[in-house]
Structures are given as C-alpha cells and as structure tokens.
Length: 621
Ligand code: DGT
Ligand code: CA
Ligand code: CA
Ligand code: ZN
Image (cartoon, rainbow, N blue to C red; front, side, top):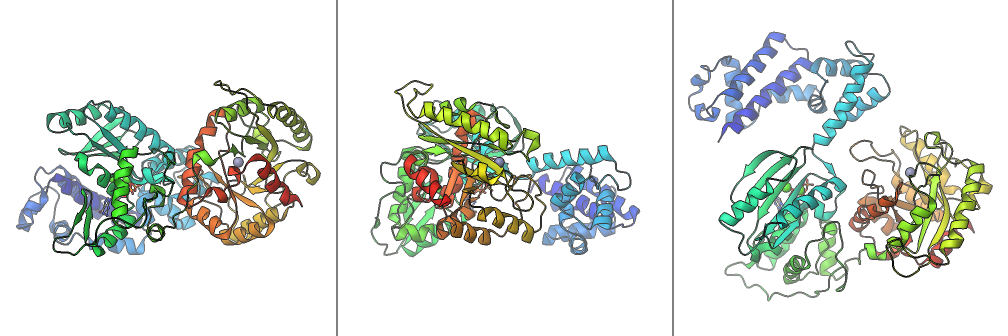
C-alpha cells in the first residue's frame, strides 16, 4: 500500500463532509471531517500500517475517537456506512454536482429544496432557462460561470468524442513509430471498435529489438508527447499518462510474437473477450493477451475452423477508423480461426451475437468507405455553410463521389438565414445550373481524368414544433431530396415529440429524417421520442433515416442503426458538411453503421446514381 490509499480515504471523508453540508448537518461536525481529511492526506505513512494499533490514529492532529472508528471501518471493510447512509436519503447524483466548479453544497441544497433536481443535466437546463440566478447568493454571472464549469466538467468526466480520441491516438502512434526499434504500433480498445465516445486510449507497441534500454528509451521518447500533464503509472512495459484535455493514454509493450493476441485482447470489448474465452475453454484452449494455448491434459480438437473468410471479404481494403496493420489483423484472424470463427471486425465485438454469427458463417459484409458513392446532406453559403455549391462539388469529385445533394437550412432557422420559398427557388436554379455543368464531366481539383457528378437539389427543412414542414408543399415537391430535421423545442415530452415526427413522416415530400434524435454528445440528451413507433412509420411511408457523421452527433447511433437493418428501413450515411473538409467526417458515421451491422444494401448512398433517383422518386408516387 502507498499513500494513494491515504488520498482515497481523505477523499471519502471530504465527500461525506460535503454530503453532510447538503444535508444541513452541524457545522462543527462537518469541519471536523474536513480537518481529519487534511490530516490523513498529508500524513507521510500509509494509514494502513496503523490498522493494527487503532490507538495510534488518535495521535494524528484532528482525529478523535469518532473519526478514528470511521477510518478503521474503511480500512477493514472498504465501506463507510456514514457516507452510505447519507447517500440513501440524498440523491447520489449530488456527488457529481459537487465536482462542478462554483456549485458548493449550499447551492446544491438550495437547488434541491426549490426545484428538486440533482443531476448535472437538470441543473444545466435550469441554468439555461435562467432559473438558477433566482436562488440566494446567485446571479446571472454566477449562472454563466456554472454553465461553463459544466462544459469543462463534461470534458473531464470520463468520456471523449471519438474524433478527439482518434486525433490524439494518431499523434501518439506517430510518436511511437518514430522510434527506430518500434516495428508495430496500434490503437486497441473502444477507439478501434469505433465507439461513439472513448474513455481512454489503449496503445500497443512491439518490436524484436524493442527491449531493455531500447524500450526504456522509447517510453522516454513517448513522454515528449505534447500535452502530457501527469504520468500516473510507469512500469517496464506499461506507461499511463494523462493529457491536458483530460484524456488518458495507456501504452503497453507486448512481445512481438504476442502482438496479434494482445491486439485482440486489448481491443475488447470485455464482454466479447469473456464470451470468446468461454468458447476457447470449451474447445480445450486458454486465451489471454499472450495468445491461444492448449490446456494441459485436454483432448483439444485440432485448430482450424470452418471458415477463414473475413467478414470484409479477402480483398477488402483496411476498414475502420485507425486500422491496425494487415499483419496484426492476420495474427488476430488466426486466433479466431483456431476457435472455428471467421475474423470479426472490431466494430462488432460487443458480444451482441457476433460470435454466433461468426461460427455460423453469417457475419455481415459490413459497409465501408469504398461502398459510399455520395453524400446527401451538406450546406453552402446559401445558409450557414462556408463554401459555394461548386466548391462542395469539387471536394466531392476529389473524393471520387458520383453524386451529392445540396441541402441548406429552411427559413425558421433565422439565425443562419435559412431559405424561404423565394430564396429556395433561386437556390434551386443555381443547383440545376451547377448540375448541368458537372454532369457533363469535370476534372477533380487534384488532377485526374474528367468525371461526371450529379448534384441533387435538396433542403434540410425544419420540422416545426407541431410537425409541419417549414416550406410550402409546391416548393418541396420540386426538390430531389427533402431532409426533415428538428432544430428547436428539444424539451417536448415523449408523446408530443413522437407525434411531431409522425406528422413529418406522413408528409408526402419527405425522404429522410436528419439527425433523428437530436442529441449532442456530452452536451445534449436525445429527444424523448419513441424510436420503435418512428421506425414503423418510416417503414410504412417509405421514409429513410440518417446517420449523421458529425462527431458530436453520431445520430442515429449503433443500436438504432441495427434496428433499421432488422426492420428493413434504409439508412443514409451523411456528413452534414458545412465546409468542404467536413466531407472527410464520413468514417465516424460509418463507424456507427458498422457497429449497427449495416451492409451496403442497407445504405441509400451506396446506390448508383440512377438507382438512387429511382429510390427517391418512389416516395413521391
Ligand atoms: P473505454 O476505454 O471505457 O472507452 O472502453 P475500452 O473497451 O477501451 O475499455 P478499457 O480501456 O478499460 O480496456 C481495453 C480493453 O482491454 C477492453 O475492451 C478489454 C480489455 N480488458 C481490460 N480489462 C479487462 C479485464 O479485466 N478482462 C477482460 N476480459 N478484458 C479486459
Ligand atoms: Ca480504452
Ligand atoms: Ca484502458
Ligand atoms: Zn441539421
């Protein structure tokens, strides 16, 4: 034991003091807990060494019989009943509120007394509604500060956007690969699985001469990564650091012959690994981060499975956000094959039926970037985009697309100068003119032969609070693609928001629901809609659903995408680009689609242009 345990004991004492303050306990008692916490934290010896002689605890400044007894309880049982009692009568979420700068126990108690809310989301909603400022000792300024603090807390509180994790991992891997002895470096964990948010980065590194002094030097080199603010774990083969933004990185060294097994193990998910290990045991194998080995004395069947074909097909290009080297994936594939399974794409590894599917040779042929023929949601200078129709078209050509749809905002989004009927008709003319020119063939900006691009005329029309669409029917009917999106009144109760969407789905001009749940990752909860009801209505009316690839949306998410596949509702994977660069956000939406088991046939924008137009026109008949 080290003094880390002292710090933890001190933390529990302080937290309890805070809870006591929220509960309105005697201020003398509260102070005594805080004093004890200071004493425990600054004591140079591990408190545990005194557990055998409880009387010695009393020699610490500020520790009396009562608190000594509490400390003994914590040391012996790992529990603190005083704290647990308080948590029964007070909302546990309050402990989270306490982590937010500017929210002290008195304010939290006042919020609870007046509004009976205790979660960060609820308090944020109060602040946004201007209701916090009305509390005693508060004001508009304090309210703004708390809103800021909540944003900061979210950044610190555990999870990070997939895009941020991927960027950081890319930089960290580049730094590792710059070391001469590093032969393999890869990102594992939730990032490799393409989860919408990531808790920490799990990097793996290996090389035949990467050992001893060379390994130590490589780890040292890694510590030069900009933004490292804390090294909280350091061993011969493992390094754990925290970056300024709060994201943590684990770097693990693996022996070269175990790289594939380590990649498999540390990619997880834990649930997938547990299921896989169970299957290995039944077959007489032990499976861990060092590889697959025969259990002694077991009559294990010969290795080798029914199928060695990969779910992506043999010749499939590397897919996923930060694909591991083909060599490492091949080593993984061997492990799966020995267990009678086809290689399972990381995005599927959640113990959600993928092992059974791999055993039966029925893994989906997951959609990948190469299948996508166009992007059907993007903005231009006509509303809040940064580029012209032509600039977006050129960027699409450079990506090898066959078509795009220009879908600016409608008028009710006044902030961004959304289009009313008159301006929409002008925009329609501009799109038709650009389409007439680009469909003849254009040279992509980076060079190469001329290629045609179809430019569809579309709109991202607001779904108003009552479910009406924000543009006249006769204008909508002239457009190739109508996306309906919610951009306001996110607070509607479930019945109202579901009705609102149902009404929009019934509109004969609507093709697609844009970012259907309206969530903003780490910032805004999804709409309270009844997804199954929406899904059935979409099926009935031939309306499709979007997977919006904007990294702070990723909307629909993976489980919804999978329900679309099961229900037979087509999905469009779009970027909602407001700038030509944003077309490159597609892999984030693809990650959701792949995690949702989607195959090319489930995705609207894998269709060739003519079939796409047929699919869109079918809705109008
Ligand atoms: P995160 O970081 O919360 O976004 O999620 P992961 O999946 O990256 O989880 P993490 O970083 O705790 O661990 C990375 C992988 O390592 C995890 O997916 C599976 C493997 N792993 C870690 N600890 C265990 C364990 O105790 N048992 C098993 N079977 N696998 C583990
Ligand atoms: Ca992780
Ligand atoms: Ca980790
Ligand atoms: Zn939008």
